[in-house]
Image 1: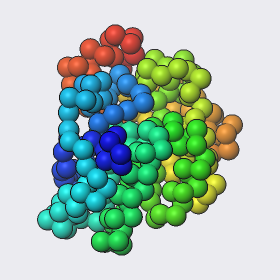
Image 2: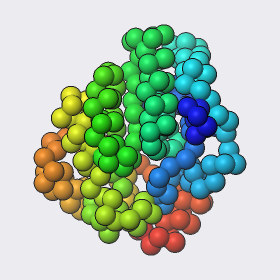
Image 3: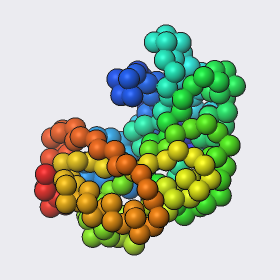
Length: 223
């Protein structure tokens, strides 16, 4: 971050969600072994340019108009890393909705910072957004191996989902199927129930790049 400017390295159309305008940023509080953007998040200072919320929204809306889309997301890294990046994200949402109220904004997050800061969840309830929380393990041990973060942080993404739902935000968990398989999904469902979350678990599928295979082997994560 530089003031309220966030680094983005590209703006693009993506086929997901039936077609979506995507702003790819850099910088994450995790270093997940299967992340397709691992190398940029490992060295974010080497990639991208700083954009204000206004400039980023302009680039996103250009794609929306060109492709006749109604969905927008920030991807590639973690949109919310702290106070400044959260403020940037909120202003980005506001700028986009001011220009086109029909937009459906999907926040893809690892949920760590939202789970640590309930006030962020409360503020997000002001906006008609959808929040997809990517869960990185089914217990503390698997979480630490997959995300590279301390196992004790496992609970925070679950708390994020619970807090968001309590404030009326549509939020749900998503997992990487090849990593979790049925046993991991079953274990996660039990954890979600313990926290008081009743949500379907979305499954996504691994994008296999050579560096992903290398990282999986280094972390001893089986697929």
